[in-house]
Length: 109
Figure 1 (cartoon, rainbow, N blue to C red):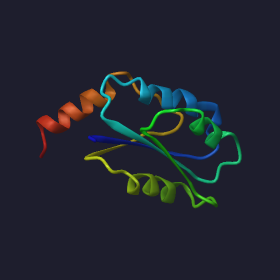
Figure 2 (cartoon, helix red, strand yellow):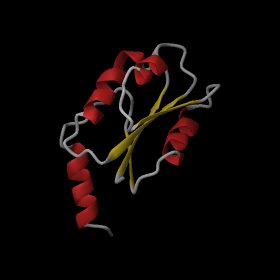
Figure 3 (cartoon, one colour):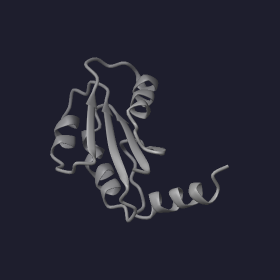
C-alpha cells in the first residue's frame, strides 16, 4: 500500500460522507482510509460504518483527547509509505493522490 489517507474527526457528520466519498473516488486506488474519531457525539461513526470498503478503518477514542492528539493518533495508525492528512470537512479532487504520489516518487529527496 502506498498512501494512508488519515482523517482525524470530531462531530463531523455534516461533512464526513462527502469527504470520504472524495477519497474513495480517487483514480489512484492504492490507499487505506483511516478515520480517527475523537469521541464524537453525533452520527460521525455511523457514517463511517455505512461504507463497505475494506480499505476503511475506524478508530474511535473513548474520550475527547484534543485535536493535536487525534491528528497524531491518525498518523500513528498509518501503515503505508506516505501519509495524507485530510480534514473531515475537505474534499479531494479525483487526481489528488495520483499527483502527490507521482511527485513524491519522482523526487524522493
